[in-house]
Image (cartoon, rainbow, N blue to C red; front, side, top):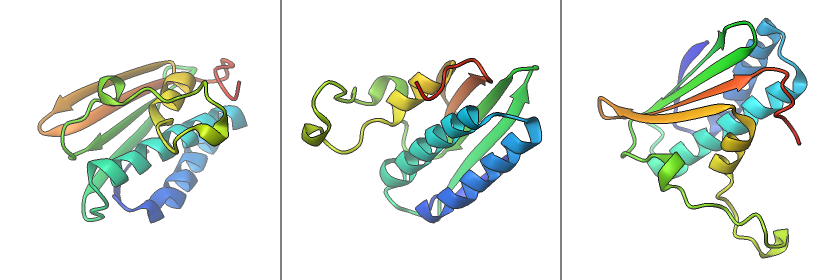
Length: 142
């Protein structure tokens, strides 16, 4: 599946539906589906809110494909200003009680937790984040 979405948070439902259809197609379980949806929801929201600063005329390209017998590769490309979330995003506060934490900051935390491999590059003026997820490995929900 390879699609381009306008950078509008209203597209989160369409992205989720497309992920569910892809997961149905490849027979991915509910835990894998949840992990992929959560990570893409967080990443898309951050691109729209911070990268494009709400400019819904900008595109976000998402490609999800089966990689080998037991993995999924996910690529997200945007043309927002250069930002490597793996090195430039602040680490979230996961130690304080929930009611004392600031809202936000968990996107990259979730991506690192639920994905098996993550890499960033800047190519032709675009941010490119690639994620690899092994299906059914238990690197889910826990």
